[in-house]
Image (cartoon, rainbow, N blue to C red; front, side, top):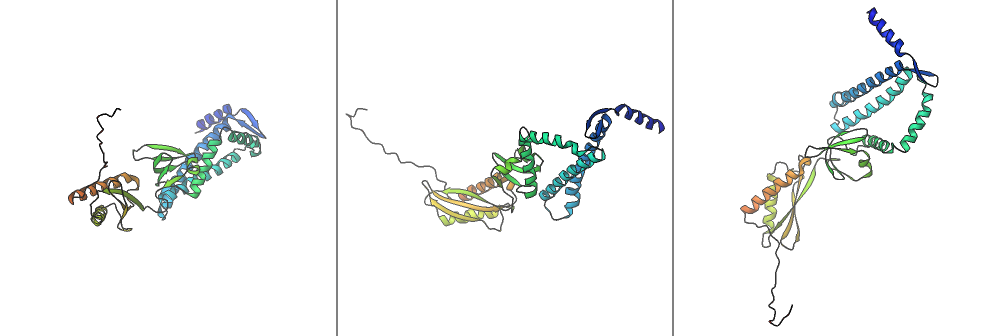
Length: 291
C-alpha cells in the first residue's frame, strides 16, 4: 500500500509542472487530467440520472413515455451545467478569468457556431414546449416517421423502412410540422371510391360501412361514415371516412386493407368500378379534300 502511494506521489510530482496561468490559478498537467477525469465522471452521472429519472422514478407516474424522456433530458442538461461550474470551483479555477474565453466563444457563436447554437436552443424549446415528443408520428419536410429521441442538437426519426433520419432541431421550429398524435391518437382516414353510373348509392354506402366495421383497426367510436361527394366525369364519387388509433405508424396498411375489402364487397354484389370513357366522332372527308 505504501509503495502504491509512493508511485502515485511520484507520478503527481512528474505531472505537477505548470503549463499556463489563468488569473490567479496555475494550471498544471495534473490539474488538467484531474478536470478531464471529473468531466467524464460528470457526463456518466448525468446520463445515469437521466435514465433513472425517465425509466425508474417517473415510470410510476401517469406521465406518457415522451414526457418522461423530456424531463430526463432537461435534468441531464441541468446536472451538466451545474456540475461544470462546481468542478471548476473545486479545482480552484478563478471563474472571472474565463470572461475572455466567454467573449471568444460568443464571437464564435455569432459567426461559425450559429447553426449549432440555433439547434441547441431549438432543442431546449422543444423539450419545454413539447410540440413533439418521443413516440409521436410526425411529418416535417420530406421526412415522415416516429420520433425516437430528442437530443441537444438533433432529433432522431425512424421511418417505416427502419431508416433513422437525423433532423436538426431548428427544422421543428422554422418549418410546418404535422404531428399525428399531438392531442389524441385517434386519426380519421379518408378512402376515395368511384363506382360506375347506374349503381345504387345506398348499396354503396352500406357496403362501405360493412367494410369499415369488419376491420379490427377501425374504431367503433367515432363511428365510420360515408360521403357522396359528386357526380364525376366517369362515375359516382364516394368517400369512406374511418377512425383508427392503432395504425398511425402504418397508415398505408389500413388504406390497403380497406381497399382490399371494398374490392371484394363490390365484386360480390356486382358493383363495377368505372374507367375513363371518351367519345370519338369520325367524320368522312370528301374525296376532293386535300390535307
